[in-house]
Structures are given as structure tokens and as C-alpha cells.
Length: 92
Image 1 (cartoon, rainbow, N blue to C red):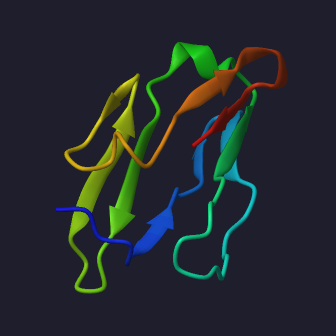
Image 2: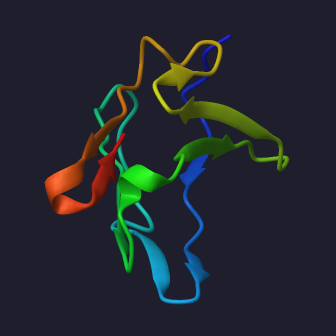
């Protein structure tokens, strides 16, 4: 079932000269507000990689939200993932 509680995150990844950065590390919102998460990549084309997004529950469990156009159970009606190739940026 859908829950509006949890911590959404993307860990910064660095491999050689490739770096992945989440633009907003923390965000406080009211229940029912819309939220946009973005990450960008330097050193390579983001379209060459699979993007996985997860929500971390307070007790540490990870819930799969999105990967390559597919959504985890209960998330498809709440999130939309898109790759902006020209900006080398992914938005959820």
C-alpha cells in the first residue's frame, strides 16, 4: 500500500571521472505537496545507465520506486520519471 512517509534519496556515485549528483539533498514539505527530485551526471551520458530510485523507510527498508520506465508497486500513480538527455539530467 502507498505510504507518504519515508526518506527519498539518491546516493552520490563516483566512478573514475563519472559523477552522479542529487540536486536537493533535503526537503521539508507538507503532506499532499508535490515534490520533484533531480540528479545530473558529469563525465558520461546518463542515457547509457539505468537509473534506480528508492525510498528508505524509517526502519531502514528500501522500497523500489522507479527504474527505466517501470515503477514499484503503488508508486506508478504518484511518480513520473523522465530523462532530459540534452541536460544530462534525470527527474522524478
